[in-house]
Length: 138
Image 1 (cartoon, rainbow, N blue to C red):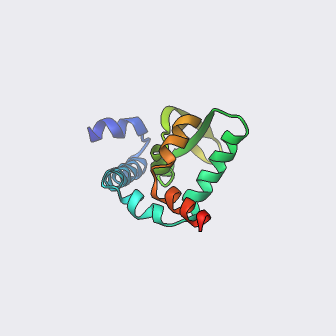
Image 2 (image 1 turned 90 degrees about the vertical axis):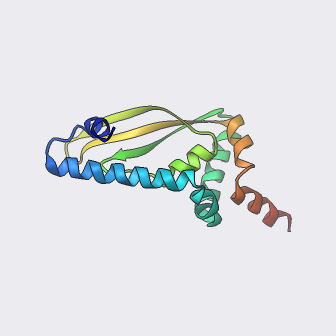
Image 3 (image 1 turned 120 degrees about the horizontal axis):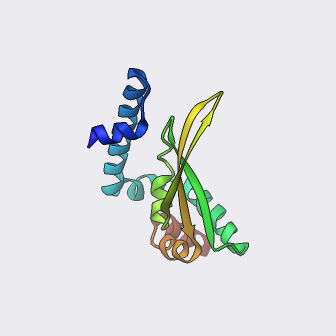
C-alpha cells in the first residue's frame, strides 16, 4: 500500500521520495488523531479558528450561496489543519488540482464541497458551536 501511495507522489529522486514518505506518515498520524476524536476534544476547544471558519462559511451561505468550494494543499506541504473542520461540517472531497509553477514547482490540492443545508445541520453538533451559542445567551 505504501508503494502505491508513493507512486501517487511520483518522486523524481530520493529526496522527493523521502519527503513524500514524511508527508504520508504525517497524514497517517493525523488521521489517527482525527479518528480518535482529538480534533473535536482538543483542537475545537480553542475558540478562534473554528469560530472564524464558521463565520466565514455562514456569511457565504447568508449571501445566498448553497455550495461552497475550497481547497487544501497536499503537496509540497500538506495543509491538514483544515481537513478535520471541513469534514466535521459535512465537506466532501470532490476532486484534485495538480499545478506546476516555475518558481515553486508542483502543487497538489484537494477540492472540497460544503453544502449549506448539511453545514448548518452538522455544525450544531460541534462543541465550539454549542459553546458559542451559550456565550451569546449569557
